Image 1 (tube, rainbow, N blue to C red):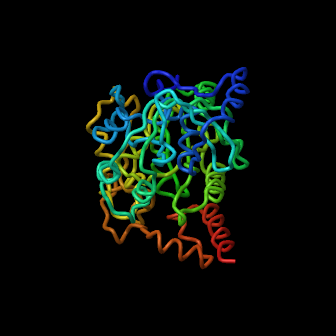
Image 2: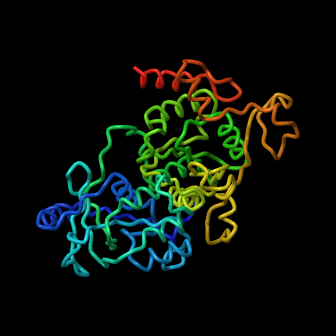
Image 3: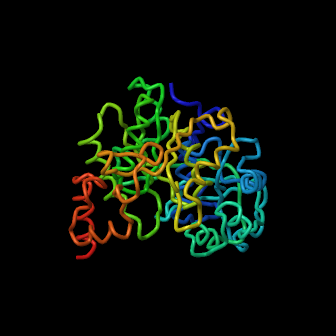
Length: 386
């Protein structure tokens, strides 16, 4: 028995087969809106129901309440606006009820949108409320500032699913993960969000969570990320190696999430939790600096943000974990909640130090990273240099 989808039902925006051809013909005569990679990822998430209860890009009421209150117009919890921007020239003459063809980066039309509203918005206000900064050095703020001048909102109907040549066996939609959990007999499932390789600290908190639930959805994000993040194909090899060597395979489902990364810290943690609820998770792990970047957020802000919501309205149990590490005195993995020893007894490496070691072909200590994972990262670092 998976969690109830956010809003009560799993949205499916795919056009019935008998309608798809007619809609494609209609789309040929419609004004086209070209989506950037992030917007295209959002469209895919909308289409498969991962963004339930949204049935399209946000109209003003959803947008305004999301920005100011972290809720949709109907009151449901929601962390980050899902919007489509449009230039003033393209918006000229658009009226409620008009139809738009939504075009992917490959030039194909993937969806038809019915216009409900075209409206102005304040990018700097959204930056302050959602990202807690107006600094253009923040990647999420930079993407927001790069948007066009207006937002267009309304429901979408998907004409075709985006096709991906990578990770095909791992591209499970929410209805599919739910069916898999039911097949496995899992009544409780913990979701783990990651855009990085899973190191020993991550492994430790995942296994702690697995002690209290039936199974794990290891759910890496494979949409657009920062240019200096480790590429998705490298990360996927790391996840496969880790599951092969260190997890009971009948208790893990590895699947990718096609969303783009916003680096929105606490707000994005809320979005990630609601999305994993739609994928069927009953529990969701929030560690230190979830979805963070730079020094924009406090270490545990992404955990504290959930305090303002009730368990009933979230519909998913949040599992908060402290910073984890290897302690030489404890001779094992621990956290600040369980280890009394001094910092010098703990194996702690900065991201910069780890990257330097990998680039030099050196394995980080086994207390930090499993050797199989380190070897994959070393090979990738060498390939990048050559």
